[in-house]
Image 1 (tube, helix red, strand yellow):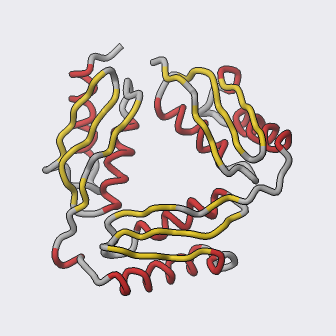
Image 2: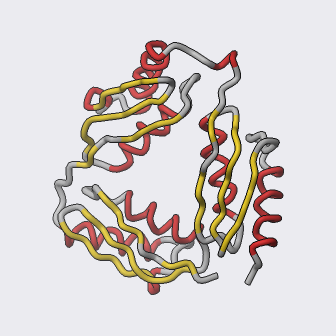
Length: 217
């Protein structure tokens, strides 16, 4: 099992290895396998990317992303311009459901509201907003309105685990009730835990996932 110092070294190396982020002002600390990212970064997309980099490192059991987005002056924009581009991005990515969502922008932070039938629509809406120039962060308040029975949700998630090469299905248990899913069991890495949660979110009708899976490297 890796020590905290070894995990810290590997996370720092992973951040330097990623050509899509500038790690100059990122400080990494590790305690009991939980990584904290502190400092500041020049875009919201880079903040998300830095978190992904940390989660990929073996031995990481959790990540606290405390990075502050400090936009360069050239990327700072008025809220109405950000809102207009966010709506356009939603329309481009979700042409048949974008009208169900509402965009609110304050001090560069984009809030998404409304209802979606599928979690992928909520996720795609957030991803489209992240890329808008001038965005400092996204608050996704879109609600999922389930239209699928609990047993059907449970069955579809278990089948997805069985198909996955990245999730050991026999070690993960699924409970479902009224669109809410609870995952239990053990996995060997944070990445495997994340993939299990992602597979659960992709099932139709899921409005909440409580991930109780324990990482045992």
